[in-house]
Amino acid sequence: MLWFKRAEKTSFNERLLALHRWLQSGEGDFLLKAERRQLEQELHYIFGYHACQMTIAPGAGLLDTSQVSHINLLNPSMALTGVVDEATCSDCDSPVITDPFHWPVSPGSLDLVLLHHVVEFSERPHRLLSEAARTIIPGGKLLVIGFNPKSLVNCWRWVSPKHRQLFQDSHLIGSGRMRDWLTLLGFNVEKITYGAYMHPLDRHSRGLTRELVEQRCRQWNLPTGGFYMMVATQETPGMTPVRPAWAEVKRRFASNPIAGTSSCVGGSAGRERR
Image (tube, one colour):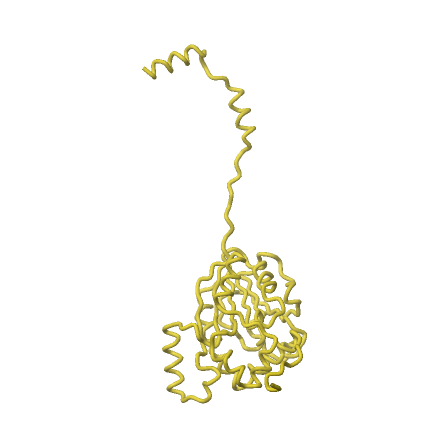
């Protein structure tokens, strides 16, 4: 029973810092490379002037190949302050430490927003998505990368004490639930892709076998990858044409009486009936 004993609840800063350190290890490096490789395929088709990323890996260069002109890094945790200072953020203009639920960004000003493993470790994941949606222009893109609960990663955390401690107090959100949330926020989910199918068993398999399994699973897009990446577009709000008030129209017609008398009108009407 002690093996299943729940540890003390950790804070948001502690969870992000522990996950960042894990991604820097050899075990998490495989996952990070797979995410970067899959992300690069989507960035070639996204253009704009302003982009923003909130990530647990500031120095990973996730948006290095982005076509967007200006990229800013939002640091959601004070614990990652030293990491941001030491990392070479070649893909961002200026890192900003901010509250993840209150971004210092004007509404409808960003063409691209990347949320990298911050939604599932947040105390209020829906509030974080809502804040990101507020800053995206109509037609802008939102990229969400998260751990897949229907994967070996989620199963392995119940076997490995190290992984169980790493993912404690996290809220792994499935791709179906995430799609429903984004739909409620006014997004159109265009694509959901998966990757890192062999993680965390990749270090126990041979190189050729691992690559073959990964390639086949990606071709079939099986929903059992270690992570998922969701591409969503902010839908353009419908436009209602402004028309003159009916009172204005009535007054205009009332000032121009109908030519002719009622008898003429009645007579003409009678002839038409005949």
